[in-house]
Length: 219
Image (cartoon, rainbow, N blue to C red):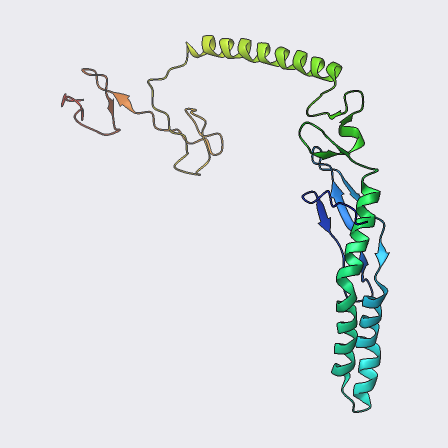
């Protein structure tokens, strides 16, 4: 009887078909915390043999004047012919093993690890969170929101004395440092320009202007 294939969207194929490292291994991950578990490595002996033949016997045959490619192709073909069936069988064994490390939530259908499982409820921690943990998190969230609101109110009160009408030079024209609205550059000490205002209409007047650009009054 063929094992039903679960874990179709939370596993990674680490198998190698050819070479000295040919073998089967699969990595499964918890769909809540993304922690991973890898199945035990299983060697694919046919693929390893194909790699040895291709590198060893094929090279020796070429030295003798024969066609090493023919031997290599035959070895690769043998490995390819048995690869699919062997990989499916290895995947089924890995799934059976993985089922002992994961739980399937009946509500959200995700596969989760032991740490993300609520055994008392038979659901994952996402669907049935730990009550004590939720209470502590809510208490901390309420504390942070209250402090944030009080800090915002304090900032509003402090902002009443901030001069919002005066334009500020935010980058020093001499060294290009940020000035953060200061009267002098903290990087080089350059005195920053603070545009004056028209005595008649209070509009900003550029340095050196003889007349106000807003009302035409002489400055």
